Length: 253
Image (cartoon, rainbow, N blue to C red; front, side, top):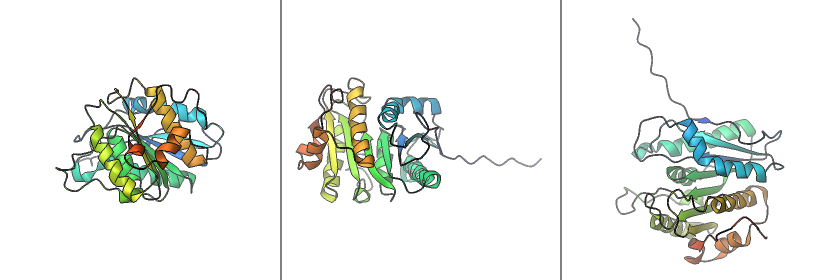
């Protein structure tokens, strides 16, 4: 009896969040979290749930802009060392957007290990913005080589991290941002004081901040004053910018 070939896993894009635009003029790829090592396939339901708040806010903010927003469903749950599966799937997702929609600006927005994937894949020529929320980054003194930053030159980069994060060390994202800022002035980082890894206490503020940054980068809307200040301020001020409670409720440009 002939043996059946093992199916090859493939990454895929979830359905467009919000109304599907008749003409796409920009795209956001939402990259859920993952594990350091895992050969399991992620749950598409949990992946979508982790990014739903940001996806919904973007859909409302960009309903007249032609924005296509998709959750990326990875082949594997884990980063898996040098395989860097999540980063490879993020790069594939950008290529898929280009294939579907043509030459449109793309933002990669990732959470946890998805934040690391967004930062790695940000060098694709179609990417104009990278958002990394509570990004998981390896210890620099034990990594085979430091996390790359040169691929982010020419992109706008936003990092958001809770100061009480016990899963993803916020000091590591600060060090990464410091190195990235030396190569690219368009890097900013916000700190959410007293919040943990899930940023649950200030979820509305974090999604409002990410939306403000994405809409400003992809569609030229004016950035809120805090984002303007964070981008303009020299280190460490622009990399330890506090995210104020209530941000997004009464944005003034």
